[in-house]
Image (tube, rainbow, N blue to C red; front, side, top):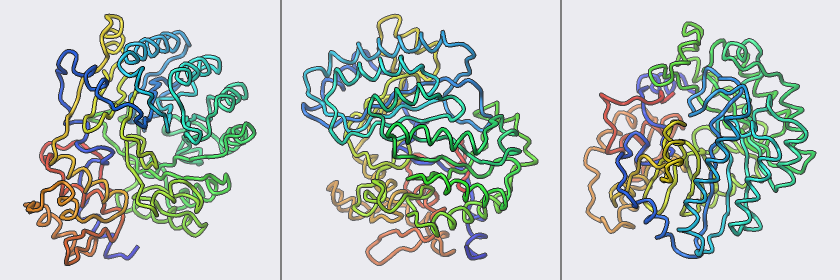
Length: 452
């Protein structure tokens, strides 16, 4: 990266959302009217395409960089109890959708660590879903994997139940870095876990990596990128660590004086990105890389790339049904979030109540801005006026949005063409540009991750 562009990014650095939804989760409303969620489920049109998400909020050990909703357990009892709650949640949802012939195109198990489930329990739960829904022949079934917490029996259960994509939480290969973040994990362990999956026919492999952790340097990042390539993943996600100890108290356990500077973080990302791209991986959005023949690359080239709570995806199903504590569903233009904390989630289900706690029903203005932001995040360009026309808002002037982009344009991070199209020239500026179209972002109260 040119030195002047790096300095420009550092100058504009601020806290902005990652925009996995719009509006973002902090703007969801509480106090859902009684029966409202049931009405939303009933309104899903017959024959619709559906995505399913199952959240497993448990880990055997807490990683100190973690920003997820999860809970550490050292015995299996709470996990068994939670599975029974998940089944009861599904039994409450099913009567409202059972006659709709919904087609499942994606099923994703996230966490926490879904690999904490015993193979038999995973099999029983996924069979329940497959017995109730019609799955497309090409449906993607994905699971997030902690390499420290799988076995041949578990991986065999995944393969037997048509799991065809596995996302491995790796973060780094440097032992000093991994021990500092309370996640001791070796390259050999990662390699063996991936081999186990491939032996069971799970051939679509994702690797999640992270930059900005304590003790990471340009040298360790270069080594990590090269080791990642040796595992031949289909996709690599290179996330920037978000240090938000005001939201996640366990992050205070990290040595702040060992966190890389903002400038060093940029250098690390650029170093790893150049290694991935030199190896033939295609850059996807702001922080993903995919092989030439991967579905994500195809989605990018055919304007089907999407961004959701799982990051970049080729999943464009209009309905997302999510189950589990903190899980967020999307039904048409509405987001619905379950109780985030296990005690409240358990209490509602034990009373026979839907475990929902927050929602947001988007207006046309929200949907318009959401589409612009998604295009900036996915395609690194957007024409707001063209998008407005598709919403029959031909006279929308986007008051203040283009003014907010002025400094980014001045510093060659963004370009605006004569027809009003916004082009991101440096991908790390995408969130900054998207924030200019975020009508709800309050600079004085924002508590998000740094833009770099």
